[in-house]
Amino acid sequence: MTFPASYVVRVVFAGLAVAALVTGYIGLNTYAKTLGLPSAPLDLLYWDLQLFVFDSAPLDDPSPLPSALEFARFAAPGVMVYTLVDGARLLFAAELRRFRARRSKEHVVVCGSGSAAVALVERLRAASTRIVLIGSAPVAAVGDRKVLYVRGDARSPATLRAAGIQRASVLYACEPDSSANTAIALAAHGVARPGGRHPLSAYALITDPDLCAALRARRLSLPGRPRLRLDFFNLDELAARVLLDRHPIVNEQPVVLIGLDAFGRSLLVEMARRRRLAPSPGPLPVTIIDTHAARTVRALCHRFEFVADVCALTTHDAPPGDFPLGNPPLGELLPAEPPQRVFVCHDDQDLALKTALTSPRLWNCGPGSLVVRVEEAGTFSRAFDSVHLLEGLSGALRVFAVNEEAGDPRLIGEDLVETLARAIHDSYVAENTARRHVRATNPSLVPWESLPPHLRAANRRQAEDIGRKLTSIGCALAPRVEPELHFAFKDYEIEQLAMMEHERWLRDLIADGWARGPVRDTGTRRHPDLGGWDDISDAAKEKDRDTVRNLPRILSTAGFQIVRVG
Image 1 (spheres, rainbow, N blue to C red):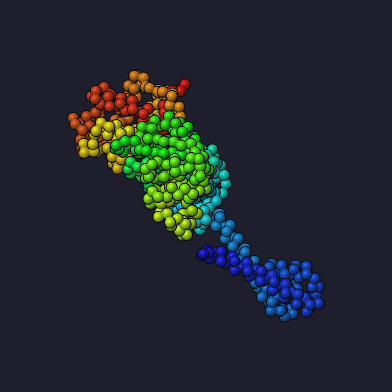
Image 2: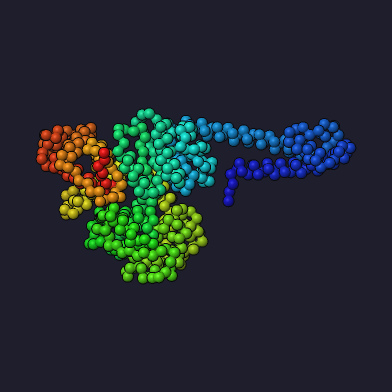
C-alpha cells in the first residue's frame, strides 16, 4: 500500500513532536538539577511545553545545555512552525477549492455520498469531467484536481451557489432519500442560470419505480421552456437495461427469475419489451419464484399487458428463506429444460448471494448463466476474482452491481423524452414487422441504436410534444397503474391533435431546410406534404390521425396512460 507524501510528512513531524517532548523533559530534568531549580514533574512538563512556543523559562540562563535539551529546543519550535504552515496551507486550499467550485463553468454537480453518488463520480472522473461534489469525497477521488468539494445541505440555494450551479451543465441528485433529491432539483431550478443556449440539466434519483414514473409524467406536462431540464431516474430500471445488454436472451430456452423486488419487476418488463420487438416463434418460457409471485405477476401483467403476450409465465409462491431445503424443494420449481439464464434479483444482497451459493441446481447451466444482483460489486467481485471463491463453478456465477452499472451518465441522460422516443420507434417497428414489412424496403425497421441520428431526433421532437397536445384537450400523462381507466380520443380530438402534429412536423422540416416538391426526395429535401392542413393529401392526414390513435398504446408500453383531468 502506498501513502501520499503529505501523509508521510505528517507522520514524520508527529514522531518528531513526541521525540521533542520526551527529550525536552529528560533534558530539563537534568538542567533543573544543575541550576538548582524546582524539578517537580508538573514544572518540568510546563517548561517542556513552553519549548514549542520559544518561551521555556530555564533556557534564559546562559549555562550550557544537555544534549537532549539542545535537540528539543530546536525540534519543538520546528514542529510548531510546520503545524502553523500546514494549517495555513489547508485553510488556503479549502478557500481555493471553494473559490474554484463557485467559479467553475460547464462542470457537473453531484449531490450525495452514498454508493450511487460514488459510482457516478467514478464514471465522471474516468471521462475527465470537472466535478463539484456536495457531500463527502470518495476515498479514490481524494487529491484529484478534477473533483472539488462543497460542504452543506444541497437543498440550500446558498450551497448550490457555492457549487457554481449557475454555470454548471448538469446536476445529479443522488441522496438515498427520494424526497431530498426532488427538493435538490427544485432548489436548483430557483438558482439556475436565467437563459443561455443550454439550460441546466438536473437528474434526481427516485428509488421507487412507480413514484419515478409519476414524477416523470408530471415533468412532461410543464408548460413552456424551463430554465431547468428536469428528469427523474430509477437505478433498477436502468440496471435492467444494462443487464440484458450484457446477458441477452438469445434463444427459446427457459429463463428463471428468483425474487420480484423492484429490480426483478423491472427486469421482467424489460425482457418482455425486447422480446416483443424481436421476431420469435413463440412466447419465452419464464419461471418466476417469489414469496408472492402469482399476485405480483398478475398486477404487473395488468399494467404491462404485453408481458403476458410474449412470455409464457409460470409462477411459484415460495419464500426465499426456504432455499434450498424448502417444501417443495428448489428442484421441483425449476423448469424441466435447463434454463439459459437464472437471475437472482432480491434487494437483500446477502439473501441473493445465499440463494446462489446454496443452490447447486443453479450451477450447471453454463458460463455466465447465474446472475446475482447486488448493490455494490466492489467487495464481492474482488473476493471472487482474487481468492477464486467460485473457481469450481466454471464461471457460472456473475455478480451484477446495480449502483455501479446503472450509475452511468449516458444512461441517466436518456430522460423521459428519450424513453418515449424509443417507445414511438419500437411501436413503429413492431407494427410494420407485424405487417411483414422488411428492412430491405423500409430501412427504418432497425433497433433504436442503429437508427440514423436525424430519425432519432425526429422521434424525440414528437415525444417532446406529447404533453402540449394532451394539455390542449384537458388530459394529462400518468403512470399506468390503473389500466381499467380506459381512455379513447373523441373524433374531434383526433382531428385537432392530428392538425397539431402536422403543424409541428411542418415546422421541424422547414427549420431543417426542407421545401415543398412534387415527390419526396431526401437528397434535395423536397416533400409533397409541406403545406397547411387543407393543402395536403388525405393519405397524409390519415397518417397524422393514426399517429394520434396509436398514442395511448405507445404510452402504455412505456408504462404510462392518458387520463382526463378537470
